[in-house]
Length: 407
Image (cartoon, rainbow, N blue to C red; front, side, top):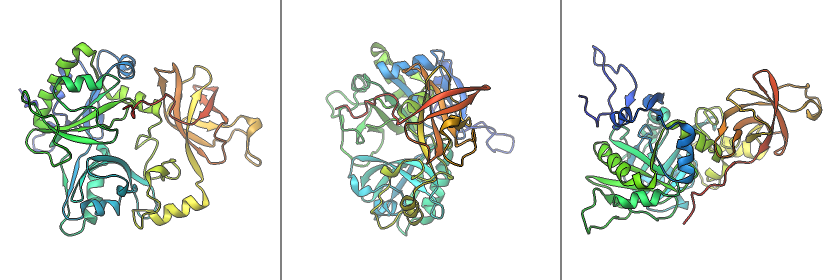
């Protein structure tokens, strides 16, 4: 039997990987009957027999658990590690302190395009954990390692650490039942020794984790109150089993990346590779809130300041169906003929859908689209859905009220 904690892909005759990498929990997912799909070079559960809609609803109304171990993990250490990252990543690390997390962007120096969006976990001035997307982890690692000053190291811990996300209104009850700390502020994190001995403390503050410590992060990608647990890969199976056992009385539901996608779309959270990419800037994506515009340096600063001054030529918007149609990526977006801007040929595409899905919460089609900046933020637009013109309303996300900041 294969080692259940291994993240290695099967190897061919010459020892080269013969397929995508596997989570330390792969055998657990197989036992649960998961349907798998490849994400960023990793074979991950897309859905379980429960189905995407029920998994989605469990997170909105109760609690769900996701394996997101495919996410990258880069450990940046050394004198001035935080200052180095502050001079490269878009957001201002000066806005947060030890024990806090922050959403940021890795932008191209020449074009300002978004190479990746990442979370940074600020331990102290000399130690920061950066979590990029799976598909971009190697490139983010390459760029940071190449730019790092002497004494600062950027270590790829992609396979060494697993990430479990417990998300939903009852997430606190599940974590507390296995002895993990809960109730800390949104976008903060603490370390906890696990398993916790009877009578032992549950948190050690923001200091460096050692041994079987679990980093308990008040973060997530669903819009619900929840936590992400970063643990050594060898500990992940036992932690998963304990959470499922303790969560049974709370209705804890294993959820795949299909539900993760519908949940994030309801929040209007952009997905790299679809809504944002190296060809899309933070100004176009309306992610200016994740840019420290007053910082003296970050990758792409000059070109992005110039773009913000003159105005972007396109923008990322939300769309909601006025009927029963469901938008899908790459569908063209048009204005009704009578509303075309002056000089604009009738029916000419003004953009395209980047993400689209059926919203289980709203029971209608929703999505994100990259459109010309001339399109009004409250305009009605037309999509060609299977040969039919379907009307959608441009709407500012989130489409569903978020609960991430609940105290």
